[in-house]
Length: 183
Length: 328
Image 1: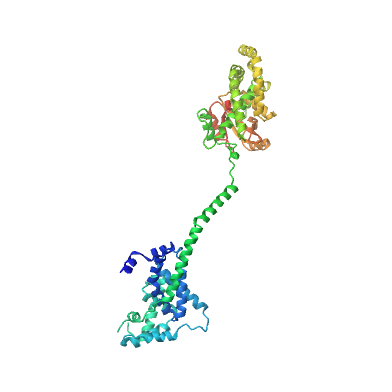
Image 2 (image 1 turned 30 degrees about the horizontal axis):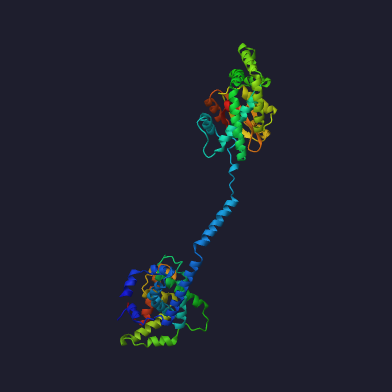
């Protein structure tokens, strides 16, 4: 109850400003709001636990260091995911060829989790279909599922609104065709 | 059948592990504490204020203002002369140039002292002398000299009237800019004796002046010594001619100061480029700030309006209409 009330009282920007002023409790609240969404996005983009943890840590360290210089041009959540995406791209650029992107054991564990029986097969096919999508389409699809609007996705990925729309359309079409799901 | 989005939402969400969370929160706490310590030790405004102060100091050193170097232009516009002539008694000092009052007073003192130093009707005047006085000592000495001059000039007022009367009479005839009038004026002043001395009235005046001679001679000597300390200009042919011409004019008449320059030849060359008759231009020595200069004076007009009308037609100079009473 108290946590919900605090979330209503303090916006992300005000919490970040409080932290910039030395209030560590404000950062704690801000971190708990967004940590899981960020981790999930990173994991969907790159299903490797170790790498995702490293990128998530780097992302939050950047937030900590840049808190005092933050200018609220966009929502804090958009800024956070933009940083995370840039870290992800940096990682992919410097990735050593023999480093596996996907953690196969983890993926297998996820897919074998106890889900509704009727969706077990469909869910496995969905995750496989997402893995087979091009990076930009998968990224747009995952961000949309995290609650971002097309405009916010465009800002995070650094492309135009129309490009985001087309990427989402291609992602849905390709996934549905692979799953055999009607729109 | 569930839609694709609904299906995706059903997939298990990955959560950030607790170990990672603790690590990030610890780092955030350490970073905040470090930042607070830095702010206490070294405020953010300090480097900004220090750099601003250094910049201001450098600016002052580089662009060091020298207010003593600022003075009035050599050839003021006709509008300036309107103000200075029409409101000569009312205006104590022009805006933003407070020292010009002292300069004007110095010119007056110089003119008066030069007048008193001569025993004839010829009087000299520094036309538009622009001079900056270097220090306060000079100011005080000038002020003392001025008081002394005013006192002695008041004593000699009667003598002045006697001496000025013939010159004023002749200047009535010589008023105007014709060469004839100038030719008539020059011999009078060069001989330093009025042509109307033959009249009975003038003879009476001369007698009265001679009666006061002993007193005036001693006063003139002291005035001469004071004037010599104030005036550094040397009399040349042009200067003498010009001063004689100025002295021969009516004090209420007006002349046009064309320009002031240090080099007489350059000034003459500039005047020669105009359509003005060179024979009507007189060059009088004046004191500039740290040097001597020459002022070019042109013509004599009875009224200020006539002088202004003539001044407007003169180019490329920016002439200054001046009353002869300022110069005599």
